[in-house]
Amino acid sequence: MSPRGVATPDVRERLFAAAERVAERDGPGALTSRSVTTEAGCAKGLLHTHFAGLDEFVAELCLDRFARTAAKAQALSELAGQGEVAHNLEAVALALFDSGGPAISGLAMTRPAAALRIREALEGGAPGFAAVQEAITGYLKAEQGLDRVAETIDPDAVALAIVGSAHHLLMTGWPGTPDPRPPMARLVAALLDG
Image (cartoon, rainbow, N blue to C red; front, side):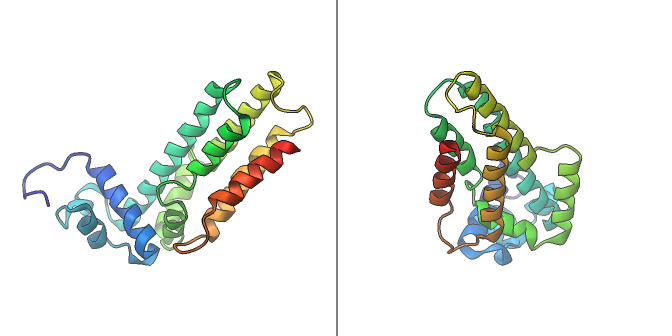
């Protein structure tokens, strides 16, 4: 635990990582400001020093993780012509499940005020599933231009199927449910086979 009056480095990320561990291990209902700060090994009031409350913290955690995944998806454009197309798409699809994916999504659903804040941020342009879908579409079009993806493949439909399926698996998963990664990998392969 950090001594009183001593700055805690990377507070936001430390608290976010602790929340992910709590939600993944114990489920979304176990997340409290105390469980997060205890898991993070820091002062009990630290979360409330940096966030207006647990709802704001949960919303910021979800938005941060959405932004990270969207950044990974946007990096797809740099991979056009490199590696295997299915592997590149699978990496982005599976990134949606990193960092406690289903547990974090479940967490947002259990806190209506956080869910509202997330929706408002996404409507205001914060990166989320739409940014991931656009990046996948752009990547597939670039790969079609390089003749690495069949012209019969509809990039918009494939991107929607990948993101929609990931969203479904995130919203219906919880700690203890089967790993969503194998079905996502099979879906990507099936969509590319057209």
